[in-house]
Length: 413
Image 1 (cartoon, rainbow, N blue to C red):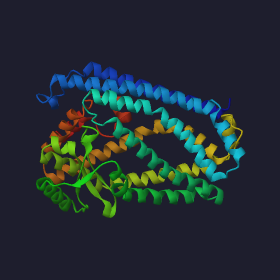
Image 2 (cartoon, rainbow, N blue to C red):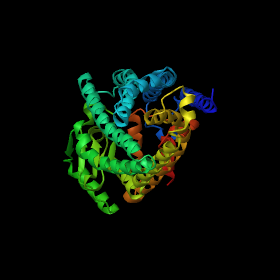
Image 3 (cartoon, one colour):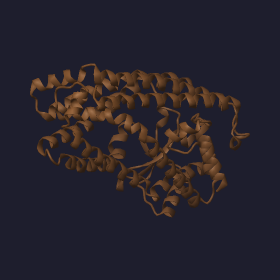
Image 4 (cartoon, rainbow, N blue to C red):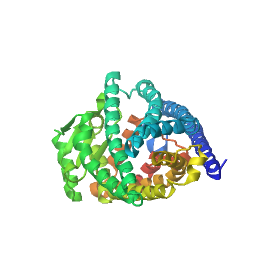
């Protein structure tokens, strides 16, 4: 057994163990404190709601634990069950060429890994989410969404994979740089096209016809020195009662989208406060910084793949006799999974800092904190968000500050 394989198995086992321990800590903390009403919610939340929050969080955590264990076992089965050398040998014997073989190889592995998650998604949607009154989607609509999403994912992934293996074959020394430039352009193009082409395949977007909210939004945008194509209402209620709002697009495709569930459950000043927070992300450059971060990480990963893709130890460690680029990239991807997991708290910390900056900007833009606090409280109770996460769990996973701490901070400001 090589040092590389030992290191991978240790990191893999640690990542599975840490996820399990964090979930158990979070559940224990919730069971111990979940019946207590936080000070900032005193008089505003009923004991029955706290009980529903606890039950909902526990149900989602349990199915998440089972899915994590199943997916982890599947990764080990794919790596050590003989599938990779068998599939690589089959493609090598067909002599299809690097690009077709690479695309077929990744599609085959992707189908296996993706199909394994379908039962868990079905149980969440039609079991847990339906039981707690969130899911409104029909099986027919779920299937239509699944087929459309699978087709779109296959097309976009096929384009990226074809470009990747085409460049590996054409530019053996510099393919990593050419692929990074292609990926950067592809990311920017998708950011522009998503709200115009892809999102409307799943939902119906209509210009918001509420003059009070539209006028308030445009006033906020003008005050912030930003422009958007328009304010849109999306028919989210036909799938779920969860509510949200977001900004999307780039350049002329930039738009504000409000869930119909949000519009039906929040007061106008609360909706405007939520949007002021989203405007803060734009004004503080968080979207640009995140995009730059993604591109820098992708550049480092592509260059690292270029350095390691022909490393004999990579293949021998996993018992693969075929030293081909698509096998090497898959093995490197599996190696990176536990590493990425242990680096994820850094991304969570940066995201929480961005959220605090956006809260501050929202307060400076609107001049008041109460509408944002009321909106956060309503969103948390409507979505049954956990009010008592374990501090270590929140530090590791949460991309937003824990709600109680976030509201306390807003009150102090």
